[in-house]
Amino acid sequence: MYFSLHPIFLIALVTLLGAVAFIVLAFLDSRKPKRGIILAVVLALLAPSCLLVVVLNPELVDARFRTYKRLYRNIRIGMTRQEVLVLVDRHYPPGGERMPPFVMEDSPNRLGFFMNPGKSTEPNCEGIFLQMKDGKVVGKIYSRD
Image 1 (cartoon, rainbow, N blue to C red):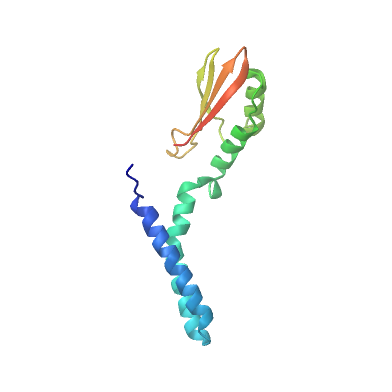
Image 2: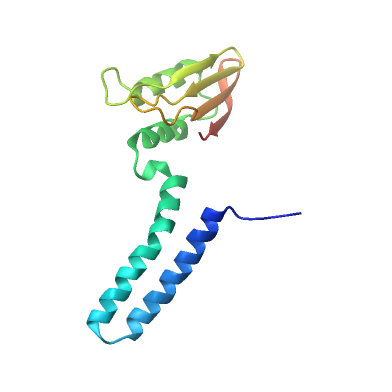
């Protein structure tokens, strides 16, 4: 089986390893001005790794994702359709900061939501898909954009 990493992961890994090496050099060097320069290089080397973490975890910087993922985590197996809709209203109160998710599918066997991007155009496909049976949640899937 063939396995490869996307170049952004390789760049983040190499710069992270470089940053660790420079940190070791900074602590081995006793001269403070040189130590400061080395630590500045470390911060520059950590930028790609930090960017990758933010890209992979947008909830760290965007409250829309935090609220939406909190909604997903609070949906429990066995909840009724009405309980799920009440939960949505609790996370997205009328007149609140964030707009409630779009209900994309509401059938006896499925209930699906897409995150409302608000004034932004992204994300546009972050989804929560619930499998329903006899009016209760029997399965749930979170789909990233």
